[in-house]
Length: 333
Image 1: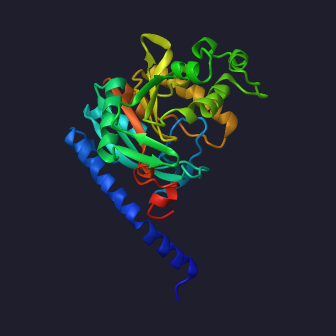
Image 2 (image 1 turned 30 degrees about the horizontal axis):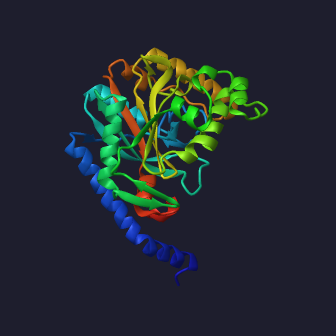
């Protein structure tokens, strides 16, 4: 006799089937888009020794058991970024991947602990040309006009390109870069109280979340570009203004869709950033301790000038279908 939970699961899948068919067509359209532009599709390992160096992401831990009885700790990666950059360094080719990725402790209408990330890397591309390509991709896989929640989004208009400095002037009323590192000044000029223990970076993200993100990407998608150097991550600094990094995030209809870098290729600077991130992570989650990815750092010296982007494919499907939650466009959840 079939259990009630099995019946409910079957019913849910049947209800989702029109959305899931749309998802499958979008996968096909993504592959056709990149193959038509000369990209090579790759697959990289999911269980890795170093899953990333992000300070606040929590990872899934597993154990690799060898036939000789020894074992080794592995982690499910939070992004295929390190591995894909090693492949770019080795081949010099533009690459893309639809990868499953894992981030522990995340679940909401727009977050899942396991999801699909679309990442691509193009040697020779700058941030502006990567934005052009991202616009082209979204127009290929999304309708020219769509509704998500209370937002009507028009994709046949040029996407907005807004620097972080411009966004803070417009929506917070402060000169963000002039306050860099000075939490008291940023709080005072933004007219907010600084919370106990709140750093400049903490306050930056609070203002971004509360005052900027609700107002961008509503009538048309918005590229939020040129992040403060403290949030450079794996992006290089802007040679024209070292206070900012060549990084953008893409917002559409209230969803953060993508994060992109004009890639840092200096292994020494990247090592220093990783070590600083590791020190901060050890203060927050000391159990998340893994060795630096030396293979990735060594490959940076051979990596050509490249721009790369990570785009949440499931959220893209949410936009295309109007689904209110990620579960609605997942085969099983």
